[in-house]
Image 1 (cartoon, helix red, strand yellow):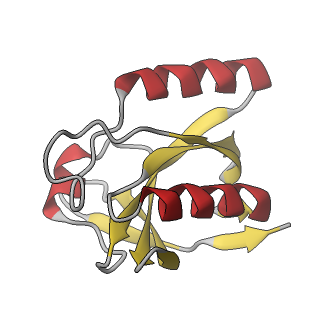
Image 2 (spheres, helix red, strand yellow; image 1 turned 90 degrees about the vertical axis):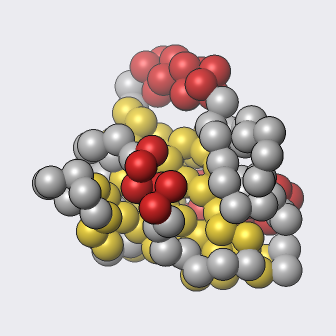
Image 3 (cartoon, rainbow, N blue to C red; image 1 turned 60 degrees about the vertical axis):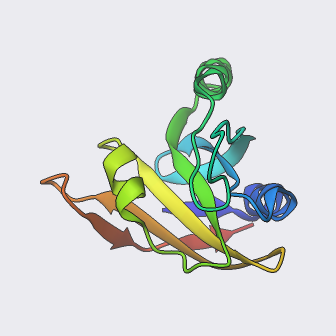
Length: 135
């Protein structure tokens, strides 16, 4: 998957501002190229530092924007405050088939390692994917 630098910078600001809680959102684009993000709201009422729940209205709004722009929802992103950019068992339980999942570490308020995953064909584990950034 490829990620436009402009979308990356917007995501970086979002997850850094969300710290010390998990920031989350939606990646939009076409043909495995993320051209924009939709900043979501973590509506989880407990454990926001290590769990997230993307507001369903954010997904609906992102779908509307994607339709208007002739693009698609490619996947979802979220941050792991002060933890590695590796999927948790909770991430696996909540993943949907067919989407990319980008996880980024935010250490002491600054975005760090960023990794990309998809569900395996069996749906029981994540497979790491290659992530490229471009202008």
